[in-house]
Image (cartoon, rainbow, N blue to C red; front, top):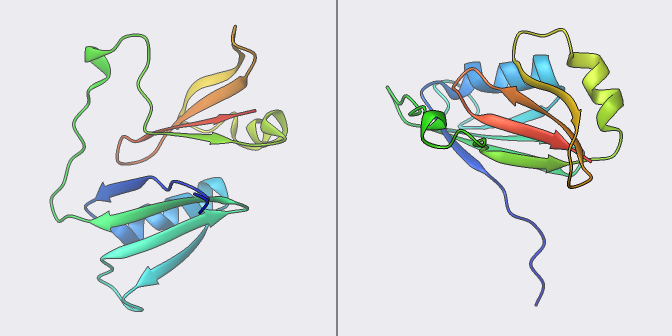
Length: 123
């Protein structure tokens, strides 16, 4: 027996619009269910990373960041070439934290998606 991966699953009010953002802004690919809107599910992938979206009509993710000033993340994506990827997106308005070398050795940056989910890309 071997566990292979864990996939974050985000509740969103509009699967299609959210998936389009990930495709256009971060270069993910999207697969939808059903095949025509309104979509209830999408799988987003880029290389070996995957995020799943589930529609919950009217959902608004609560902003819990004030409860943890040290930082609050929804997913951490480990990658090779983090500085190169950052160069492609560094001037975008969704960057929450610029590329930073952390004391624990990782170099990372934070992105806030349109629904308020925080993704960290690090390596």
